[in-house]
Image (cartoon, rainbow, N blue to C red; front, side, top):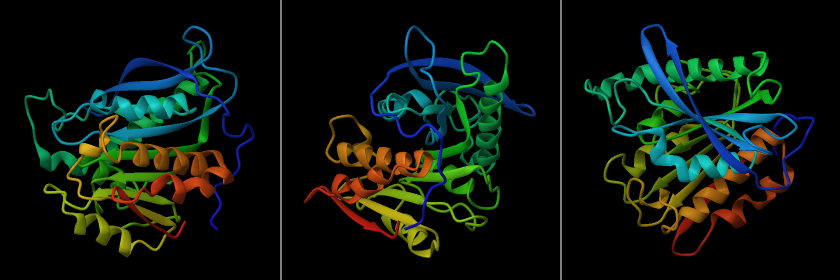
Length: 269
């Protein structure tokens, strides 16, 4: 079994309260307003310890807030989750351009760099609390492609685990082997299921595929929706394993992923 590298503090055994903050990062002239969900102890302070960072990418005409039901649960489990609004694909842009998606992996890397710098910024609430060695990435639709892009031509070698939701490959996967979890509805009319599964089949790294049976492009991402619990529990297990080296979470993956008539599971993790 491939092993995630160890961290000194282990996976949290509790669920935290969650707070958010807004920071605008940039890459050249590209403005990247970012919402960050993070665990808190008392007030707005992070609990003792260091917490892995996950970059979450939205889909076309999306916003980070559209995925807060996922981002907040990740934060409550002990992750710092950064969601940038990409300049030409977010819901509020006046210059929508889906082709700009190819620039988003580099944007995502810039946001990761910006967040990690806060770990050494005197007086910042994140100072001394970010696990800068364990970084994850996830995203839905165009955000799923963006996530895959971080593992391909615009490779970010800091990524230790990635979740591609209703997306597929963006370029050729390259660099160090990184565990990848794919999540896809088998009736997706926007990004065909075959595209996601072909990306999975071609990948030679540790990998898993969660099929949302009878589902389209993202109905299962709504809290309480059919398949949401399986997607959420599996995503949490996956990141606990890859970013916290939590062997017990790895052992729960199949049981948490599978529900008859709702989801199917394939894995070589």
